[in-house]
Amino acid sequence: MLTDSLTVLFCDETQSQEWLHSERLLGLVRFGAPAPISADNRICRLALAELGGASTAEVWFGARPVQTGMHDGIYHASDGDVLFLQLALPEADPAALQALTEVAYRRLVIITRGLGYPHLLRIWNYFPEINQEYDGLERYRAFCAGRHQVLAGALREFESRLPAGSALGAQGPGLHLYALAAREPGLQIENPRQLSAFRYPPQYGRRSPSFSRALLKNWSAGCQHLYISGTASIVGHASQHQDLCSQLDETLLNLETLVAEANRRATASLAMALLKIYLRPKADPTPLRARIAERFGANLSLLFLQADICRPELLVEIEGLATSEAAHQSQDHAP
Ligand code: 3EB
Image (spheres, rainbow, N blue to C red):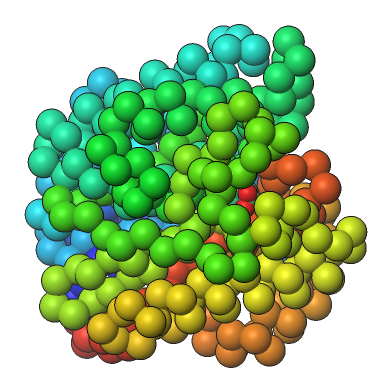
């Protein structure tokens, strides 16, 4: 059962196989051991081990039947309102991530403009060895420099038109991106408890990370989505706490703050629907699941993945989707 608006859900990987027949399928993200790039362009395979025993896929559906295509190595799918994109670039030289990131982002900008969806809303970024240094530069910082180079040139109002983002260290090779873009812009939301990442001082890298804390988008038929960036135990610009539990609590407070901040601007009430939890240690998610349910209720869809996080001291990072009540009403028909 799907709502008749843009939808994302987590389902069992076996079940996701059936969704490949849906005419509304925008794209499918699978997680697990490193594997060759999928021959099916609609499938994005990320080398992130799932924690907790399940085998889950993330599935995106348009509001209507979608049209798909390939351009310059980028798969794209659209329902007329949203453009879903994904690309995977092999990495020949781990010391050249900045240049590769520039290539990827330039392609994203060109294709979104060419197809008439120039507003990037949300970008997911995955690559291995995120905390490794090459030639004295950490790969996360090299990535940030490449992304900044392109987005600073492409976005007319850089600090108010930044897409929400996630950037994580994967366990397999290649630069993997997927993204959402739209014909009309969304509304950037920042977190009053945190310094905006694009204003981080140079101690975190010569080029600050170019992403917004969250992006609020009004889709058709009253459906509102809040795309929440990867969020960690950071207050101001400083990492907080050394243990996983305290970092988790601080992160959940940051997430709550972002939803509250967005609710002051949204026309309908937003509620957290989906969280993706990235853990640096291979920790058992069971106690974390309980803690998250205490804060956000038990109806959330949760996905626990093992990933390296952009600051070495951070053990957990959580991204999410909050949706308006309208988007919760499911319709009684298959896609
Ligand atoms: C932070 O708040 C934690 O570089 O795209 C979170 C989400 C983080 C996205 C990115 C980085 C990014 O700075 C790290």
